[in-house]
Length: 352
Image 1 (cartoon, rainbow, N blue to C red):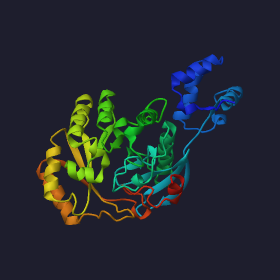
Image 2: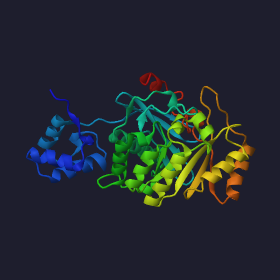
Image 3: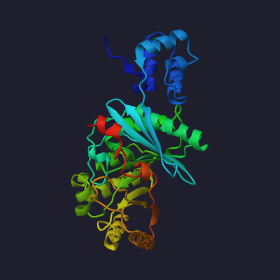
Image 4: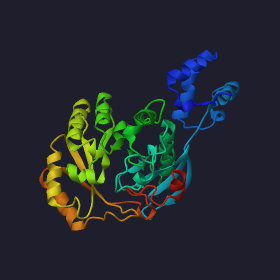
């Protein structure tokens, strides 16, 4: 017996072609797609504007797999971290409430292949790329949590959870299409930010595809020697290659780039590091998020002193750069930047 296909892996045209081959009207495909991607149902029996006969047939022809919430922790600052069961592992998503926005931080892979030294996820081996539906499901669940717990709609989505989104390009783009499209959740792409450790050729592909969402580069050092010490990816995607790719991206999209800069004590927190960063920022219009480091279990890196962070930011501002200092949220439940799966026993067991 052939394995049934996941219906959410089909494009609208593929589903329409399949249904017409089975003698159904082509418009049924759009009805099904609206149930899947606008109303987010996970059971064919809930598609009530379809005949029972067609619903039963869909159940015979297809499966509807999903990322299912398996665990939840709530921080003292109201941040919520959720673990999601997916095929071959567990991923985590985080709901981050602040005074002016409600952000979902979502994952794109089970584990990660890049092994950045400061990141807990990098200590887990890569198990699989998430399907577009498994990425979408995290957004739907966290959006519902925002409404149910805080009575506030989801305002922003960041691909800054587990995994490297640009190494799961097709499914990432498919998920964003379902989040922003019609049928879909209809969210503005300008409310979405995709964060990458820096895959130059894929940044160029984003430009070729003229994406409308935002791009963030996890920079953390504007010096090749230092960056390679903490991010192996820099050996094959150095700062010169990234600068060229970012220029191309900006030329094609007109979208300002965000640089994420985790600031580590006695590593990249001095004024010389700030000068190097200011020089790199001349490549394209940008803004800088200086991110407070969140220690993981091995203790190799430490949080920079507050006065050094303030001096670093002040130097950049004197260079007429847009700078935000991001304080950690959800640290008490290991939901802060770089900590995902740090103490998640479910994730560690399933990716071991």
